[in-house]
Image (cartoon, rainbow, N blue to C red):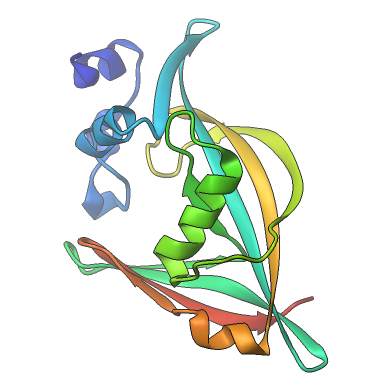
Length: 178
């Protein structure tokens, strides 16, 4: 498959895709497709990226105050940029036919080191369509499966507040729940 050719034939402005522009690259999209995290489909003659995602809200009950784990920022090691995130959930792409709850548990383990035997509370699913931030000009449909887990003080020592990957560091913090 010549992904670059397919994208260009469908009017996708891949010349804007570059780390210096804070986007991902064609090679990264191809890797997402090969690893079954993403699919490209023609829907109504428009090239669409479809992604299934597990989102997990992590709450921590400390005394009388309920905190939420926030993905604060990402530091990109290959080009030295910092991207403020302030996400109130952990998000993980679902791989292939993986069960959404399995993806959620994998996300907790990979991102914050939490090997969880507690119940994940399923809070519903929704479909969102938007222009991709990572791949400008490529419309994306997200099938989002939402979960929540409530941790207690004893679980605090199980949490890791950073995730180190080959190309980036992600930092987490706690903020009081609104």
